[in-house]
Amino acid sequence: MRKLVMPFLSIALSFVPSAPRADPRPPVPALAWSPCGEAFPGSECASATVPLDYDHPRGPTTWIALARIPAFDPKNKVGTVFVNPGGPGGSGVGMVLNGFGESLAYLLGGRFDIVGFDPRGVQRSDPIRCFDTMDDRAAYFATAPIFPYRRDQERPFFDLTRSLSGVCFGRGQPITSHMSTADVVRDLDLLRQAVGDERLTFLGFSYGSYIGNTYANMFPRKVRALVIDGVLDPRLWSSGWQVASDRIATATEFEEFLRLCDEAGPDCALGAPGGAGERFEALAHALRKQPLVFPDGFAYSYDYLVADATGAMYSPEWWGGPDGYAAFFALLADAVLGAPSALERAAAVRGAIRARLDAASPERLVYNNGAEAYYGNQCADTEYPSSLSAFTVIGAWAREGSFFGPYWWWSNAGCASWPVSPDRYTGPWNARTSAPVLVVGNLFDGVTDYAGAVASSKLLRNSRLLTYAGWGHTAFGRSECVTGHVLAYLSDGTLPPEGTVCPANPNPFLPAPMMLRAAAREPMVGLPPAWTKR
Picture 1 (cartoon, helix red, strand yellow):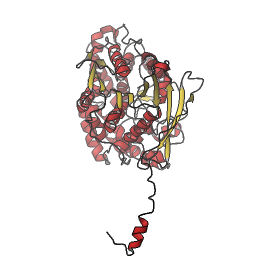
Picture 2 (tube, rainbow, N blue to C red; picture 1 turned 180 degrees about the vertical axis):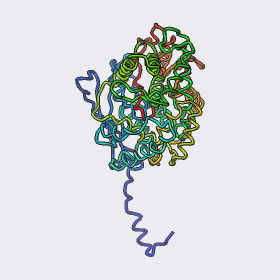
Picture 3 (cartoon, rainbow, N blue to C red; picture 1 turned 90 degrees about the vertical axis):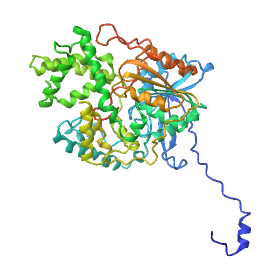
Picture 4 (cartoon, rainbow, N blue to C red; picture 1 turned 180 degrees about the horizontal axis):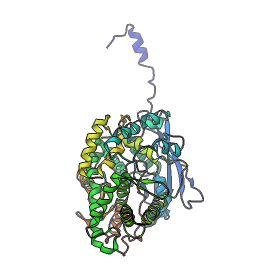
């Protein structure tokens, strides 16, 4: 250390009061709730100001959009349940306004506010946008398949998708560089404080399970009740190896789809003397060679078949019936064989399925940024290979797992040149939380496999695993048994007995309804845009 030349100066300086240190903690947002609008009676909306960069907590800010259903019984109010539908890129605001918030509020006896938030960069929360209009975005991807299923498609697909980062960052939006899940979780902890809760109550689905898992490990002493349903293995997701699950998970549920179809006999439209699997395989083989051209001129190719089969795995409730997935695949199989009017009828059934997907998100935004929000978040969290050769090698490995594997893997090509966030969280994942985490997994979840739930339950040291023995993506609202256990835990911390397995609903192809909708409204965790992930 350098000596001072004039010792009297050091003495004088010792009497100078030191400047006050800046508070390193970000300010807690003040929430001004107001009606969300005539279309959403009983709901309230607000916006929270949070740091753009938590390394500079008193610096530039961004905003988080929220919607809530206030507690119906304020005198006995317990606190706030925060909910998230997944994605990345799913809207918690839309989830609450879509009716799930009101349903959950009633099921919890009106003793909780139900709050959904759009994570930073998503929809209403300082949304990342890479294009001026959705038409511009569609035009950008117009020449690309949903995923490359022929070798000659790989280079053009990779180059186009990889270039998306330059398009997005070229618009100069600050939020583009600050969208990691760790930052989402830091926002969530500020929101917890903003509503006045000492500890967090959270219900997260699909990618929302990764938000919950990250919160549990970053803020383990701030957990009141945390439920994750449809659970990602955080080690795979954060390391870029989710493909190890994806290459087999969807196929495992799809095998059940085919088995249950055969079991249902004439009640399943895809059934055939050689089995539903043989009929579907013949359809897939034919579409790999040549697409079917619908009456409106749309060329339905192999990649669309794989995407639609993946979408079917989200909701077994849509497998059967005259406008279900089995009927659609059966009509396509008939059309390949030249059956009159089969293509026209197939187009009508596919239109009905897409209408149901649209109905799951009734609020129409001028610009739905779910696709960009997926990349902005996932690429910030995970370092992917940067070369085509690496993507091709892993793509081949994914294809060895099942024909679904490449669909999932190649969707990550947009991350090949997207910078990883220095603020991301990559573990450890084994925290002991202040209250147990309830981990919910389906034996046959083709989107987030059961192994992810088992892994998380083993990593989180005082968690409890609740198993649903059925099909589909997530279990709350789908299984009456699961729904009851989740509600009891959110209400007062009551956990299901260790080893609890809730029975599967009846065969989805049989006439008896699979869902007992009196239990709860199913959460809005539908399939995102075809070229994104969850």
